[in-house]
Picture (cartoon, one colour):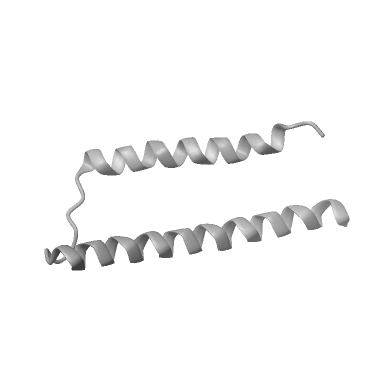
Length: 70
């Protein structure tokens, strides 16, 4: 049972952390758009691709932490 327990806790922490990060990102995007006075932000496809590549790199780096030997 202990073997499965850490997996569930880690998954739950990932879900909560991802949701929190998404909420903070949306808040900052809204605040930036309001400060500029332009209404809803218009995101270029190239900007979204850059953000996706950076996110994938970050996720791969975090996932690699599990490979380290003690």
